Structure formats: structure tokens, C-alpha cells
Length: 348
Image (cartoon, rainbow, N blue to C red):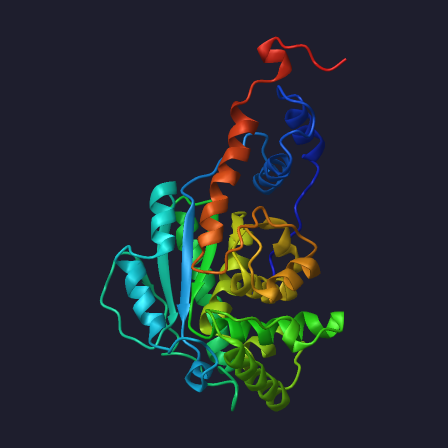
């Protein structure tokens, strides 16, 4: 399930760089757009890359720990927000409509029965995870099923012609789960404390943040600081996080461009990266979240995001806003005149 990924073949890089440099502009003057063009060209192994049917997948799931007051909102808000997305009322809907991006919601494990909707993918593992405060969040079987189903949904999306997928999430309490996963995967290596990766999530006040930290620390005492990514995601993860990790691995196998959103989505990538480090080659990082743990994640992965809009909404909103930059990078590579074709003198 976790094999079959290879690092990017960079043999085309010199030719891509020559094409970028010969455009009618000073060398390097398009900055990060030139880096994006290079990455997309290498992923697709062509001098004429394309962005086809770009799509955002929002993975939704409930967390048993949310019942303990680990979030500013009650657990019911997960399904209510999913319904809001399905009728077109969320921020991610607005951005996708204006930017011409496809959108679907994946029910990975929401504690609610949804009626059929063309924008909803029913991949439900169970109606929410168990509370990791008192027991493992999911069984090994549930974890493996979530990883597998994520891959299956991406395979279907690729078969419909999509080659650029952005990842989003919805789940009350999932920033707490992401904090635990990040703490175990990264903080131990960096000598950091849990408080350094646990933020206010959906808007906790000071007392709420203190309560969240106390509950997370109790959870680590119970379950331990686990390094193995598969055991870790079963112990503290969410179905939406596990399913995203499986989807990311499959996206890389399909040679798709992965546009990574904020803190929770990057947590799923950390799981995928721990299973197959090559997945990082296929990723573009959309923005820098205001969640403190996201900065730690980005530093650990050694990557720089395209945007810093002081956002922390989730839903894939950062990924949606970054996609036009990816399209613009491919556009200049394919359509901008070269010095030779335009009859313009190059720099002396």
C-alpha cells in the first residue's frame, strides 16, 4: 500500500530551466512562479505541462475527544458545516466557484447520516473516532481501511482527468489530533514541547487552550509518544487525517500535483511522508497557517509556502487560493514569448 513511489526524475531540469530563462524577462524575475513551473514540469515530465480539471477534496470526520471540550465548538458543527458546504455556503464554495475549481466532500467518518448529494463522497469508516483521551482513536483495521479508501477516491478523480488536487478538511477537534500527531512525529526530534504545536484551533480562549493542553498531555501519558506512523495515526488520529494520508500517497503515484493546505492537511502529509518520503516531491504548499504547529511542520519539511494571508480557516481555502498561482506558472511557461520568438534582444 505504501510502496510504488519514486522520487522525481530531474534529468529534464536543465532543459526546463533554459526554457524558463529564455522567456522575455530578466532571469529569475518571476520568482516563485519559476519554481512552480519547474516542479510541475518535472512532475509531469514535459516541457509543456498542463493543469487539468483542478479539484479540492475536503475530508470530513468527527473526533471522540471533541466531547471532552477540546474544541471551542460542539461536535455537531462538523456535520452542520458539511451540510453548509454541500449547499454552497462555505468559504471554500465561494473560492472554488470564483476560481473555477471542482469541489467535493469526502465523509470519512462524520457522526451524521447525510442524504445523497452529488458533491458528497460516502467513504465513512465509522461515525467518528473513539476518544484518544481514554483509548486508541481507531483500530488497525479502521486505519488501514481509511488509508485505502483515500487512495481509491483519488484514483477515481484521476480517471476523470484531474491532475491537480488540493486537500482540505473539516472536523471539530481535528487541530487537537493534529497537534498530538505533529508532537510525536516532529517535536521529539526537535526537542519541542506539546505547547509549541498546539494552538487555539477554531478559536479557544486562554482557559480553553489550557484545557486543551491538559487533555492532550493526559492523552500522551496514556498512549505514549509513538514514532511509528501507522501506530501513531491509529492511536491519536482522525479518519479524515488517515484518509487524506492515503489519498496523498495515491496522488503522487498518479503523478498529480498535490496542493497542501494548512495545519491539519500538513499533518496528514507528515503521516504520508513518514510512510513514503518521496511524496514530498509532488507537493506545493499553499499557505502558512496561523496555527503555531504549522510553522513547525513547514520548517521540519524544509519547505516554503506560496502565500501568507494570516488564515487559519481550513476547508482547503488556502489550497484554493494558491491554485491560480500554479495555473499562472504553467501559463507563462507555455504561452510567454521567448527572446528569440519575440525578436527581443537578450541581456548583453
